[in-house]
Length: 210
Ligand SMILES: Cc1cc2nc3c(=O)[nH]c(=O)nc-3n(C[C@H](O)[C@H](O)[C@H](O)COP(=O)(O)O)c2cc1C
Image (cartoon, rainbow, N blue to C red; front, side, top):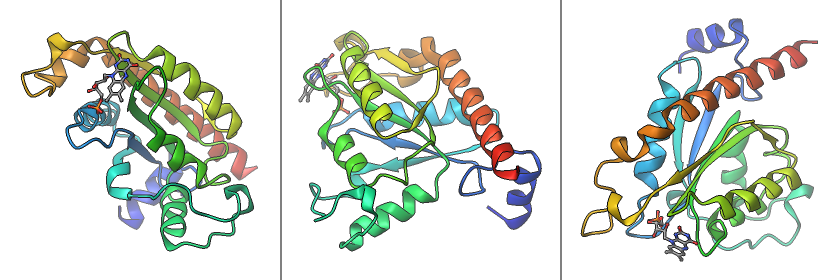
């Protein structure tokens, strides 16, 4: 993003803590044959349509964190490992989050919890939503994730998505046949997430100016 674009965003009051209105769509499924990236890309593209914020994919498979290996808890902010410092810098540079993850055995994936637990202040107060999916919409994963967001002091937006994805949506390789068709019923919710995200970042910018 150019300096002019950043200035424009500030002028429009959409700047968050990084000053750029950046929102990460976190890919929270890391299996080799996963379907999460296609779903995350769908959310990203729908949320991006309005154009006020910049949505970008952050793939936890690429971030590649090990299981939590810091000696001190994240809330203290003393990071021993380069991978933690890099993750901290990434999360610090982002103003809001949309986590996308499958339901696994009535919970959300361990890789998501691990990525959260590495840090603390970097997440705090940032506007956050999520899309869970499963044969019944991933509601069990959503319930648990909601509690964790409270524990981290994140600002949960008043909209999230629980997408029903069944075997009929998958092909013989267990991949989504047509993400646009399967996810179309959730379009308005994804757009509302973008509206709420922009409002939250605008409110933050106003507080920061006072
Ligand atoms: C370990 C594991 C546990 C699962 N548990 C559930 C579940 O509790 N509810 C559900 O609807 N689907 C469940 N599924 C099916 C997943 O929704 C489906 O495999 C989906 O493709 C997972 O996303 P991914 O391919 O990105 O990993 C489970 C799948 C795995 C691999």
